[in-house]
Image (cartoon, rainbow, N blue to C red; front, top):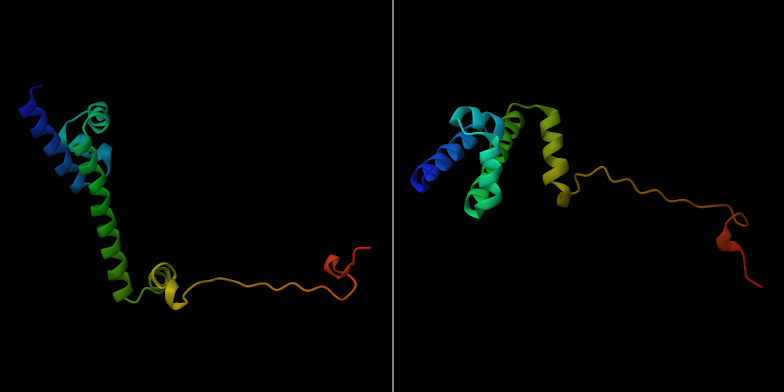
Length: 114
């Protein structure tokens, strides 16, 4: 495969990977490029590797959009999840504080050294 053909194949793969939300197997099937070839490109071509990694952001954007739609539709679990992850600074956590005390005379802290 010459350089021009390789560049076209890489571009086709990245487009397929974006459409499949980062699923390499599906992108390989769609683009007709073997997995081994893709992994060789990732290993040998930093720019290609970066483009592959960027498709993960597309998948995250897709999932976040779905989450926001569920919140808008009033799905309680989605709202709770969002607040637990994005609302921590506002106090939406499930942190528990446990205070342990022992009666006087039963704690090793009450012992005095001779």
